Length: 428
Image (cartoon, rainbow, N blue to C red; front, side):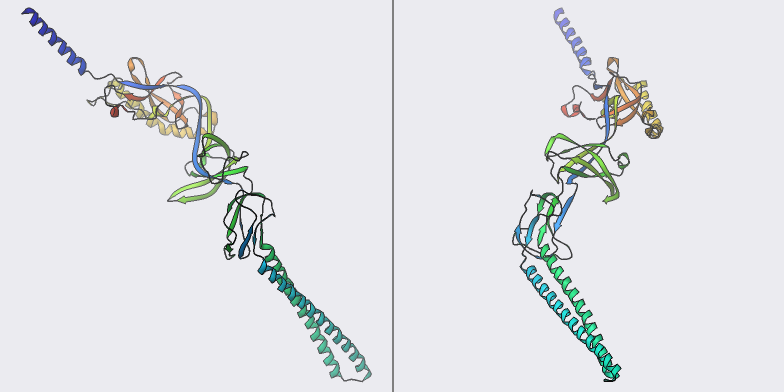
C-alpha cells in the first residue's frame, strides 16, 4: 500500500513539473548578420531601349511602283549606293518631253534673234533715207517700232528657254529620284516595301528603309524620375543587362541628360542617354536594357544589411515585450528610436550640407538597430547611416564595430510554418 501511495505521489510531482515545464514560453531566437567592412555603391536604376546612335529613315521623293530592290534586312550599304528602283518609264518620257520643249524654245529664241537683227538693219537704213529726204518720219517710226517689238520678242523667247530648261532639270531630277540611294554608310535594319508595291510621295514621305549608321556604337535612352535626376551627371559609369544575356553585365557611361521633361499620367521623368560600345555586335536595336548608374561609391566602410534597419522586436502572446526588449530595455529601445527620429531631421540636413564636401561627411540620418549581446539579448543602438545600394547601408557613426552581430529577424520555435516564415527583410 505504501508503494502504491509513493508511486501516485511521484507521478503527481512529475505531472506538475511537466506542466510548468511545458507551459514555459519557447525560447526566442534571432537571425543575425555580422557587421563587416567593404565597398558600397549608391546607384540610380532605370529602364530604356537600345538604339543606334544615328538612325536614318529613307523615303522617296517621287511616286511610283517599286521595280527592283538592291538591299534587304541586315544588308551593309555604302553612301550613294542604290538600294531600290522605282519604275523609271514615266520619268524618262517626262525627260524627253521636257528636252523637246527646251529645244523648241531655243529654236524660237534663235528665230526671234534673226527677226531682231532684220528690224535693226531696216531701222538703220531708214535713218539714212530720212536724212536724204527719201522717206518720211512716219516710215522711220514704223521701223523703230518693229525693232523694239523684235527686241521684246527676244527677251520673251529667252524667258521661255529658261522655263523649259528648268522643267527639263526637274524631270531629270525626278528620274534620278526614281533610283533610291543610301544617304549614309550603315546597316539596313528595316525594309518596309516589296517589289510591285506602289509608293506615293505626298505630304508625308513614306519610309522605305531604316538604316543604322554604325551599330558598333549604340545608346540607351532611359527615363529617370525627377527625384533622382539631380544625382546624375555626364560621365558617370553605368552598367546594364538585357534579357538576351541575363547573366552578363554590360558597361556604358552617361553622355547626355536632356532638359525637356516627359510627363506621363502626372509623372515627370527626364531622358538620360547612356553611350554603349558594341564592337562584338551582340546588342541589337530595340532591346530592353535595365540600367544602373553609379552615382557614388565608398570603399572600406562599415556596412550592415538594410533588413537590420527595419527590424523591431515582436511582443509575446501576452502583449509584453520579449526578453531584451521589455522593461527598461523596451523603454530604451523606444527612446533611442524616438531620439533617432528627432535627430534624423538634423542628421539629414547636415548630411545634405556635408554631402558636397565629400570626405567631410561624418554622419548621416540616425537609425536604430539591435545588436545581439550575451544571453541572447538584443540591445538597441543608435547609428548614423550613409549611402545604400539597396541590400546594405553604410554606417557613419554609432557604437557599432566590425564583427558585431546585428539582428535582422526574430523567430520563435514551436510556431507553425506560416508564423515562423520570415516576415521582415530579405534572406541572408
